Length: 500
RNA sequence: GGUACCGUGGCCGAGUGGCUAGGCAGAGGUCUGCAAAACCUCGUACAGCGGUUCGACUCCGCUCGGUACCUCCA
Image (cartoon, rainbow, N blue to C red; front, side, top):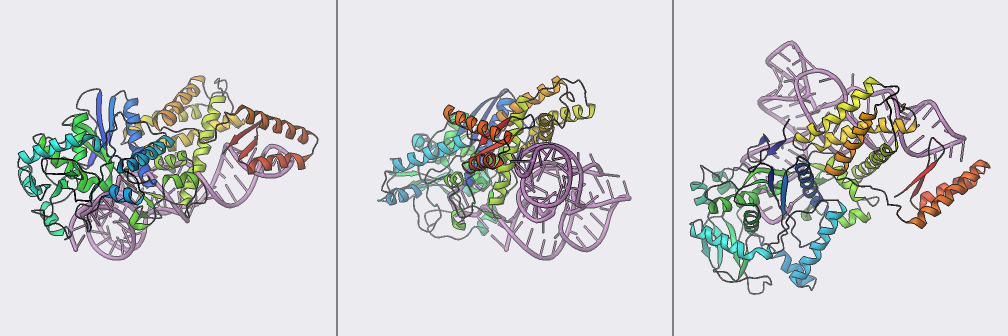
């Protein structure tokens, strides 16, 4: 079965066929670096990291472009027009670029924690002002934008009428033009626009605005949507394969991107497949500043938040994301996080156990053998079905008791053939590590001295146990546990340990 | 108000017209000096009411409830 992708544009699953055989161009809307990333940001970047990894696995040469929005956008139709980055820069007494750099670095750090692969290109909005101005000039020249008091607006009505046959306005987000005109809320500060559905391509900078660039229309800064159209076309071409982002960007952001690009590139639809990840909720509510339920990533990793009972490893969060399908909402709570943390550690331990066990097929259990083979062969099918990581994870979990059973002696080492065990090892490496991008959630005991000390303690405890001095042996075990080191008495009499 | 989507066992969460999702928690058991871990067994869930069907959690309609977008937002 070939890879099937749910395309928001057609509202159905479609077989994935790249424009150029063997190559894939993918653009994902990146973060606005005006503040710290939160749990909500984890979802799209993990989701599209999986897409990127899987496409690579399928043998495609993928160019993955993810932008950094550092130019600061207006609350376009907002009450008090204000630039998030400028305002914050004043508050924090930082240069805008200083602030943007700070949060960009923090974002990169968080992505690394999640083990997300770096994009092929990570263009910034401030680095592409020229491209954006050029694109706006093109749109103006084509007659689909007009200048008003130093700002430039996109003429949605005219576009909608002229491009209805190729890239109709509202198709992506399922909106009807007429409805929009009547249902859009009537907000202030729209007198510059000819129509309230119009959106800004370029905004004149008010006198005190810090970030500003010269343009044919005076000093100002780019509008909200133009950077993605400009940068995606620069690096991926007028038409590319996949455009990704959060569902909340579908309208108006992506709809506007389509309109801008379509005007510039003669009615071509900028991307073939539009993928949208669903939102993360906290106790049933979307995470957002207005809900006051934002959990920053630094707070998650440290556990320093009223909703959290402990620190969570980035892998626990990544795992929780992968246990659901990317197009479903994912409800987070401390309990859900706790469950994911525990579940993933168990799965990872069985992955480690898998490295240690052997099989020789001497007492072949045909049923078990076939069961394992089936579970392994289903893995690519699940991924081909619109990246169903939840099913991949479920299959891996079904293999865990088999692995642990062999290690623990409940299942004979001869029950599986060498070939099947070998395939299982390869599969875990491939799916769990390479495709799902999971990493060791335990603290690496790469400190030689620490390892030696624990070994000494284990030896002391072993002697105490031999003397039936359980008071001492239990004290060693319990005291180590309080500092995060867990001892495990293995079936074969050895003792293993792990550290949180 | 307009437009979508969703409502699955204590919690999270897949999915399908008839065949065990999975995880966490919980119960019992095996092992163990004890514990932990591991392994085995266990819940027969699919908002409500109608309809279609031999058969629906899965299709249709209605009702109730929830969420998202329409405004910066991952």
